[in-house]
Length: 474
Image (cartoon, rainbow, N blue to C red; front, side):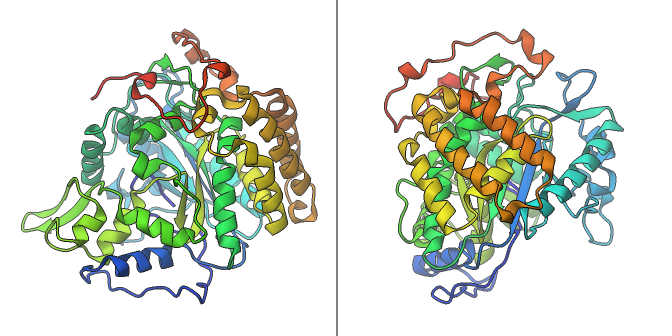
């Protein structure tokens, strides 16, 4: 699984619900009717089946051990990753069309535009098995990086270096051009941020809408509890999650939560997908493949705004350029969690899995989160210093803790239970998030920012002013 515009591979492919069969379209067939395109999107983005598998994608900022301010050299990173390097970084490593070698436990490595390294796990039936597999692969990644004097940063945004695109890939250049028309936040997102992404099955029947709603309603609480990006580009921003603030300011039609949580999320998401502007388009011509960034929606392309008409392959790619807080890709991909320091990535992973364990747990989790629904901006700005979010977090994490103590999580390593207990006791219940902790001596020299008081925050919904994160248009 990949983010930031790369092609994505779903971690689970359960059978389709019989009420909405998969729409079979040839990749090269022109799309000339919106209804056909919407039906296709609905069928491939929401695959129904019993909640059984869980997966994760973990991203890290990579920097030099001896000087975290030094720009990352793509040749050094490619050398470190060796046979695991993706073709976007080291095409010379790919032989016989087999692609990069997987890590020991089956995870695959991808590299984001700014040199962030990502591990995508295979989908596994059980969180205990997933944690053990991913830990093995994370240890392998750190060994590879250390051999070249590299390490991972403990934050979800780069506090020291300006955004610099490391991958000179045409589609990333086109994406950058599109985001530059809006403001500076596209480059921040592409090059200077990382996340813990959790992937769960969509569920069956009516449960799909409830699981979809739950992951959004839990979003502000979990975003606040795991906010870990208080600085970016050499300055403190006054936000607990500068990463999520950049996402919200970037391109709301592409990155924001849905305006309403419909009873039929598949149909609603299909409409949204077609009404979102193109990020970049692949063209094949006499001179080879090129990428450009036309300023039209996919629906307008179907209606003839561009020639030739789009194909299913164009629509498939367009779907990978949508970055909402929860992205449906057959499974449901949670994208709003900041990366954590050290091995604490395991905490948001198991908490989300626990809250989505079964229908009764989902219902209780939604009830616990209800007072803080839609407080996305307050979560990014204040973390758990926001009183509403703090109270809701206590109830939400209590529910997760009870579920993790049950038989479904009996195979979870003991040290994971201990780590979750410590995070709840020493952080969540005290109204703190990782951004409140000084983790890195290199951050000590950054100029302080006035962190707004929760009393300053207007009632939600609230928008993010781009100037709050600083930075000029590149």
